[in-house]
Length: 455
Figure: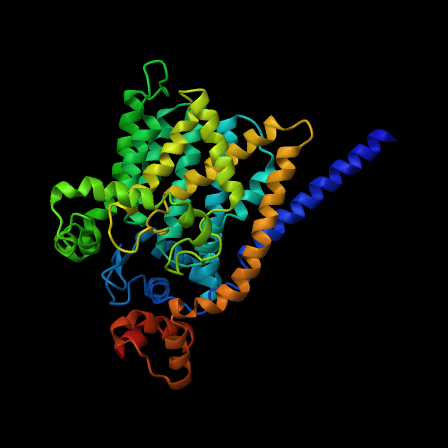
């Protein structure tokens, strides 16, 4: 009888935890066309190129390209374009369809992080806690609801971290080659990763000491390099296009524009970089206000929830007390992830250009949470405390997201431009014709050839 009661209690706990996680997953796909309202013009431009590729195999200008021009000297990248083109054929071209693809990419990234944490520990996670922490992280909850290249890069880099954890558990040159390939594809997909990935790979594989070597052989190095080279091959198609590199050159702190504006010299750059990097670890940015650009965060509670930060700090304390701990590599990856943003000058601190830090943050948070639960496992105090903290943050966060933020952010998602076009047929931003093209394709049901022939 007692055994039956324990079994029933166990089944009940599993059922409730499963229901909670399923609900959190469903919430990530809820009201995608209303929160945020509208469709940011970058989203619309990438969507237009994807629809044209799905229809004709070519971009909007009827050329075959791996990288398609979008807005503001930007380029949509091969992974985003061709995965999106396939997605259009499966689920259509509505706003919620494209954002559902972003939500799926975000979910794939979170699953990869959970897989990485389990491989790192070598045993099962406290999966209700790990799942809840990952699914309620405000940084990725929000960025998984916007359709653009960065969310694809997040998924690819998260998979890279999972493969790295698998390689650490059982090193093989084949895994090293796959790490190089997927890491290079993430570099291909979002420009800031082109700086962050090589630096991160050094952190991941370079030994701290002679006695603390992660078994990285010359064969592994050769496979990693070859995989990376294969992944970067598409860049050869744009090497001779100055426009492809212009935005990055303009935003760099060493650009002539920035040096002139700030009346600085090259010798001032190291201090500029350190000041910019420090801004991304400001508690006000991480916990209270987030990015001022409401496309990058909501302004409610910053990028992290308190439970995440506490868990990361727990991992830091644990690693510092038992140096050298391999977990220090994950914590260093957080710092490296913000380096691309710190090397730019516009809109700092910048949640989007620092996106590469998010997978390492989440991985560290899950591992730190497991440590907390282990330390206070006698009365499950750690599990209960972290669970209560997650709920206490996420319930008001979600309420704010679908109410205040949904309306407050309309200006950032061009709702006025879209509403005016729907009402009058007049497009207010003629220089952003690709975004206009999206609405002609999706709502007026024009073909790509027809719509571009009339422009």
